[in-house]
Length: 144
Image (cartoon, rainbow, N blue to C red; front, side):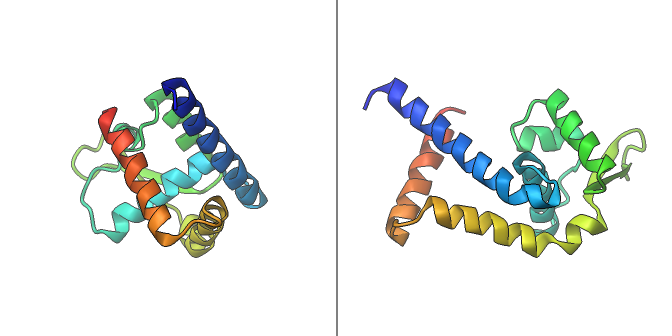
């Protein structure tokens, strides 16, 4: 397989996965990028992380350009998916948290994501899914 082919396959897989996920989330007026923000906040809360929830830190963790991330966060705040509150340590910064609206449908969001993931891996054995995840993680790690 040529390098160009691998890049194209990765791009197409990502694009189709996000497009399908976006279609599932359109019912509640949420995008896959906004879901990534919600799931990151949910994960940080679930693991009890004291890691910062500022725009800069989250953009870095999600590997999204800070300017683009600001637009995503502003839209999410306007639509009541997240709330921003002054930081505990530095009152000049704003920490980002899940709103009650997001928290109330987190199980639904996880279900929709799993549905799309199951569709993407249809016909794969558990071993093949684990291999695919391991290989993609290695590709990602190699490009850090």
